[in-house]
Image 1 (cartoon, rainbow, N blue to C red):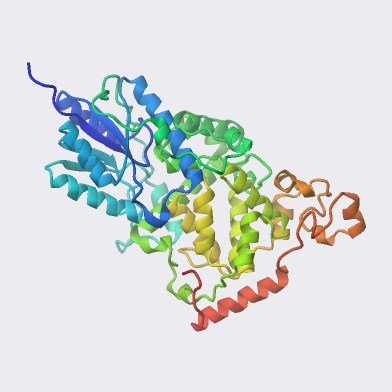
Image 2 (cartoon, rainbow, N blue to C red):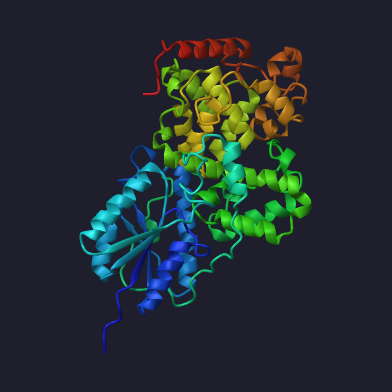
Length: 492
């Protein structure tokens, strides 16, 4: 009797699902051809990605998503092996322990992930183990969508027009069947040793109620969105007081659901009668795709402006204003509501993200990199391409960005998109008793009427930390100074 052949290793990364996963199916086929099984693993890599190490919100999500993945693998007779250490060394060690000669994984496109794949491949090759990487995170692999000159698109509309004409229609791959996964081959970390849950700060009750990490949670979120929010999405997506968005972003980031699965679900749901709303939703998937492609082709934009002339922007190291912004104490209710929602739930409505980002970069002239880092540390959907791309878009320094002179008036934005003040009342409860006509500019309400509602500005709620008109003039002056090339960047 001969020993059973060595397993094929599958390295899970940002693809925490079993269905529609090309690299996993390739690993399962390779294992079946060799008469063996797939050993699934995940590496908690403390050495990567450096300054972009996971924030506590993302760690919380990863913990629960890994639990969900492990349960699915167990249900199929396998075992998810979780190890800690440098990915290249940990995978080489696993290959050595198991005798595996092949490792499969999905491609990831952040700069550190591309460098990591190169290191892993080199380390494995040194011990005669092959690394096989396949796409699976996007609708189109970077490099597949190029302009007529064979270069990367830098404007969203033609990029998405090209993508939209080629959306995949092929059948989704099913997950490996029972018996495809290995169990009991090697040991991994116990769940309590993953060290992903927050140690001092704890998620609020709203956080626990809002989120359900894992593939089942992703499927439910998409189903709920199609049933309750797709109709009217074009308009409602901009209203933070309305449940008008999908909240799929963290599920997509961790690969609990693929964009192809989203497309297939939309088609199966028969949404032809909601064409305008569906197309707007697809375009938002397109922006995710666009940002990922941009980061792949221009890897410096995680921390440096896409537009080189913004390297001369005279940003201000306004620590006091930055702290007030982080804490939701700017005196502008719509901004403060967004920042408090972020802290308490790990999420912020997209329209409010733009308002808050505009306020930080244009009212306070704080470098966009500061805001991007705060979002990275506090968002459950922290995604390098989308986060950096979104901040650069608002700050005016990104590809196809909003022009610098588009400076959101937070009062008008609040009145337009939260006209009844429902969003502000939820997240800024000290203003909950104010009438809708004053909830976005409480300083314009007569003090006696404010006092009658139990609000004293400067005590119960802060005065605005800057005047909008003055801040706007300073922002435009800073832009002119940037154009003259006399400024210096304070981002560090």
